[in-house]
Amino acid sequence: MMADNNGVDIKIEKRAKEDRFQAHDYYNIDELLSEDHLLARDAVRTWVKQEVSPIIESYAEQAKCPMHLYKGLAEIGAYGPSLPVEYGGGGMDEMAYGVIMQELERGDSGIRSMASVQGSLVMYPIFKFGSEEQKKKYLPKLGSGEFIGCFGLTEPDHGSNPGGMVTNIKDDGDAYILNGAKMWITNSPVADIAVVWAKDEEGKIRGMIVEKDMPGFSAPEIHGKWSLRASITGELVFEDVRVPKANVFPNVKGLKGPLSCLSKARYGIAWGAIGAAMDCYDSALRYSLEREQFGKPIGQFQLTQKKLAEMITEITKAQLLVWRLGSLANQGKATPAQISMAKRNNVNMALEIAREARQIHGGMGITNEYPVMRHMMNLETVLTYEGTHDIHLLITGMDVTGLNAFK
Image (cartoon, rainbow, N blue to C red):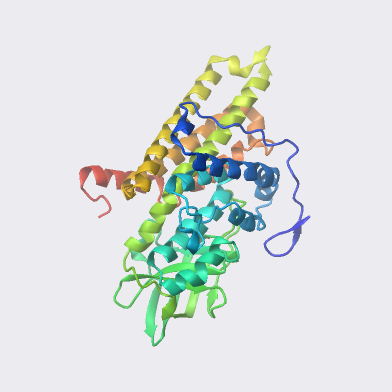
């Protein structure tokens, strides 16, 4: 028995079958990675097999967040892998960050979300835009998992158009008075701090750190999700919350602040989605060799081979896409539009592979005996969060034409 988010005992069963996942690298892309990248990836892969795979189906089925994994993610260096060590990060490069996200999402998209929100949407903006005092106060505790963070940008009526936000701050001497609400916030019900974006009295978007015990701040959980069921999601509600001016980011104003954070997170998603796709492909390939119909393995039939061949082709293309994107990111040359292309392509690819894998598994594909249906449901959310499938298409369209379809 383990306790859920509210301290209530729930029954968590370990899956009878061991995690037999084998990585698939059709184009020998591992040869393009450094020894440090491979060591980081293999360490996370081992952790996922030992700590995530045996319990994730039970947690997802019961719509509970495996809270104990927050500390485990810190121990394997999943929070801010590419941030400096002195600020609680891992001191690695963007390629290492990518392969870590890939392995976490191979386990579950919700587990990757726990890590990418903490690193890319909370630690990164504090590091990039925060004061030295803010960095020293919050980053080490976030990196160690002592603090859990969340990121408040999306509002009930402003998702794809964050510039239309109505959450606002008003000057009150040595503090600002914060009012408004945010929606669909990963980690919010259990977060110790929230990085929140709001408009000041001049209409400029400002970022700030809001602590959970500040009067007027609440974070109710969202229930009834059919996707990302092992990830805890909620709202952020601000009713005359007094935020000290010392908690406001001094080094950024405008949408470029939150959008740069989203680019960092979207980069991780582009890698992560490949992990989910690989897990579905690996399960489908193994099942096709073991399941027999008409006197032979279903993997011997032409249509099954077509599905499998197309799956590994698309995975390989996506692997090459993020490898090049990672190379550009390490040079500081990856553009937001390039990141959008990779996020859109790779998540859609993973979702299509999950659907094809479900067909190969037949009826067994809808059960929690296999990971495919859980990945498929998760990817339905990944397809539209941190920029919807269609919005990322228009970002690419604007980049190649120079014409803005948003106005």
